[in-house]
Amino acid sequence: MEFESKIRTIQWVDNISRMVDQTKFPDEYVYVDIKTGDEMYDAIKTMIVRGAPAIGIAGAHGVVLYALELQKENLSLGDFKSKLIEKCDYLASSRPTAVNLMWAVEQQKNLIKNCKSNIETLISDLTQQAIRMENEDIEINKAIGRYGAEVVPKGATILTHCNAGALATVGYGTALGVVRSAFANDNTIQVFADETRPRQQGARITTLELTMDGIPTTLITDGMCSYFMKKGMIDMVVVGADRIAANGDTANKIGTYTVAIAAKYHNIPFYIAAPLSTIDTSIKTGDEIPIEERSHDEVTHINGKTICADGVNIINPGFDVTPHELITGIITEVGILKPDYNKSIKEAFEKKSPVLV
Ligand code: MRU
Image 1 (cartoon, protein in one colour):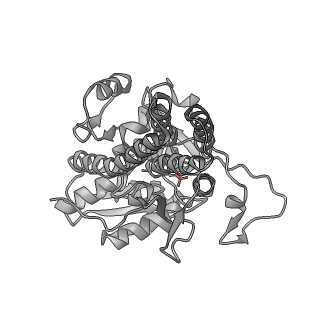
Image 2 (cartoon, rainbow, N blue to C red; image 1 turned 90 degrees about the vertical axis):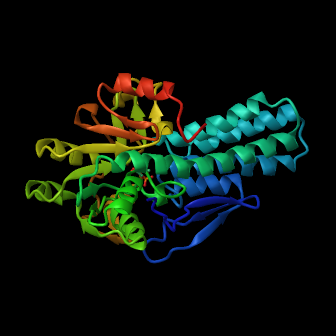
Image 3 (tube, rainbow, N blue to C red; image 1 turned 135 degrees about the vertical axis):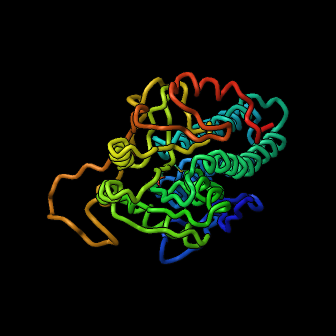
């Protein structure tokens, strides 16, 4: 049985990119129309849209928006292409860690570089590619969900960190896609959601989307996970990923590494759920993954109110890297990859994805 989620995070509609504004949660669930490339850069940077696969699609949409703007300048095909490539690189620089953004923009760049016809045909091709990627994202997540559901024990309590759900993708979700698929067959499963300081994606986003879909969810603060693991109340951990190195080391929201260490200590399976587009085989280990440093206000303030002494030192890395030794398996659209990850990742890329044929 397949679970139908009500959530559509981002969609190309009549030459605009329509997305759920995730800075407004949990007070409001509203859509915003992004109409220019610069607006898209800001939407990604300020996290109106966030989550690795969702910002990939946003990047693909952003390239089309820039192309539509440049079309008005009556440029030659050559000048149009070189200006658009510059815009692509600018868009790809809006956030550094999630490789899906660079992956999606790179696919658009390939179309631009190879175009020999004319501007109208190129814009149509860029639009079609963005729409195809958007639709495929949902199918990929459903495939991840089906594979992941096979390793969810009956009646399991699943711990997750941050939000790797429908709202981090076009719809359905990666880690929460596994939850949705498992729940479709067994409505006794439940989720423990880490709050995920500093931006509280677990509290603001994961609890919202799971509640909307009627999946039982308990919110805990980040420091509580080992307490519940020790009590035997967590059966497995499933989280998403922003970038996975060739050896399986995985960058995800700050705090994920701590959860993985606690899971290892308590002998609890720890899974990553991510599409192949999150795997960056150009880098050998997690040491090479660029980690975004975010605004200090995210740490010093909650809901606009200061929570610490003035003048205290602040550091705010947005992500950490979980070493591959702590990862039980990587759930992808072509199956669950197991250690040795260098080998299983290579094999996964050789396999043809069932949803992409
Ligand atoms: O900073 P965010 O909210 O974009 O971070 C999101 C995460 O870390 C997610 O877990 C990750 O992108 C996977 S989303 C399917």
